Length: 413
Image (cartoon, rainbow, N blue to C red; front, top):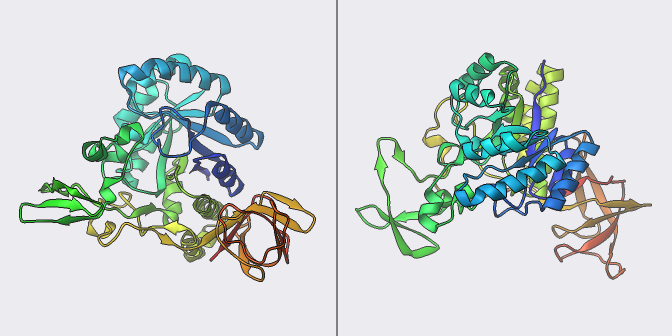
């Protein structure tokens, strides 16, 4: 049985290391230019080079996003950027724009080209078109069903790789190619500046369906609805953890998680759960079946929203939307990620408050969770003994009743 790649997002070097540490085969990241997450931390050119070297040193893959829809003024800068990427050699570059693809084919001689989900690839002919242009992989649109994906992969076989999203936020337009943010705020989602107006809290003001948003009360908009429904909605998040069997049997090459702006706890939790589920199904189908409740419980131990299977098993209906709120549920709190171990002490940066005698939960890489008790704690900067750590980003030196290795996540559930 072919084991698919588990592909995780990383918004900075810390989340990159965490994703790999908890089972990702590959990560996708963005540079400071031409990436569709302008509000993420992103990587400078120098940081990209460090990240690529790190990934390759531990036998992992890394992909760079360059999936904006470009204007004429962007083209020369894109050319210069691709010359640099061809030099530092990531494993792939994600592209949406055909003009950018033309430049990539000219310059990226040592780097694979992937077509981003932003290109809205929804059919076999489009996949074959990209294959004939030398593309290595296509990230299919989120709007395809499992049958659609199976059909495409059965036709292209191994001549081109297929990647699909399996977890994370859903956009209101075809795979995120949306104009709503640009229309309402002047910030384009196709240039990486989405303000997520599909999740603002609106209220109808009168019979003409004028509405306002609660934090923008001086601005009025009009709801337009046709036979397909309203174009403003608040989708549940995608989650396919209970359908890993279908994904693997469809021969999809790469299973992708959304979220380059997600937290360290989110990345660790989701990577570890999907790693476990994929391995369980490949090694023992009955084990995977029996562990489904465990997977769901673990996924809820981070910040999450209600879940849906999106378009995989038919078009979404009213049950896939959230009507009362757009806030996230906090299933657990991150305390820190161990950076160094010295004798009996673990060193890390505080993310949430805890105290001496508290029990924290360690996320071991083997999918086990274990409790450790805080026996002693010091403020690294002052060297003073402390009994609690109320200040965010406080540098801590902590002695637990059991060893906690470097890179492991500590949380309060």
